[in-house]
Length: 276
Image (cartoon, rainbow, N blue to C red; front, top):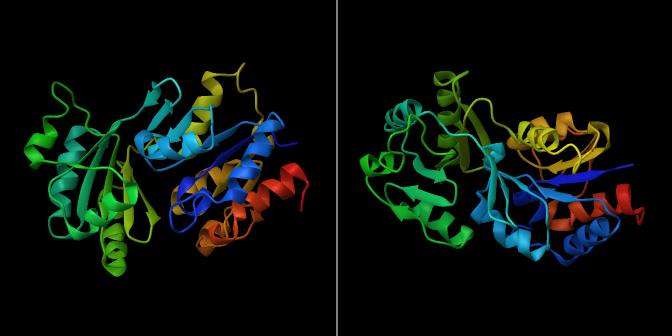
């Protein structure tokens, strides 16, 4: 018996046009009516996730920024956050200079960049709200009196090959010091090394054992990208989308339809609602 569901947003909950289908909304509503809570586990910030949280009428905390920011979106209460050490933020900035990647910085609900490039302009359009623009020196001043910087750094490129090559270089340079994950074809996410969606879920359960007395083997996780692999391997019932890369599919126990075919609803209907 599945006791809780943790679902990714992009490429999983959302269709390619960044909307939640009627079928996904309907299935999630039915799952919740059975008394099974549904949680969002996403690379997005809390502000990014808020729109979908409201559409689904959820009342559970959200595991945001790949676990770096866990927030009760209903009551606007931060449950846990992890930050990237400031010296590594500066070192990352220096490492990016020859790579021609666009960098954005996430701090709670703030979203900051040094300049609006074409790829960031496109991302702003997708996300649906504005980004703050300021010199890097001013970005650093957003964390005065602290050795810690943002919760997450996002790296973007319109060139998929360039992004992959940069990813391999950055992985080698920051091995063991930063967690760098490829969440989309044009997007890298940089977080603290001890952070992941899986660890965010584990923290949420351990911090609230009476409210969330779920057993790992009875938890369903659903995802499609590299940043979902850990939580897919961890959960007792793990579901990969058909639009996921092959190595992500191998991390899951179950394969569902793609996000274009309401794969999340299909999995919920089949394994929880018994309607398939």
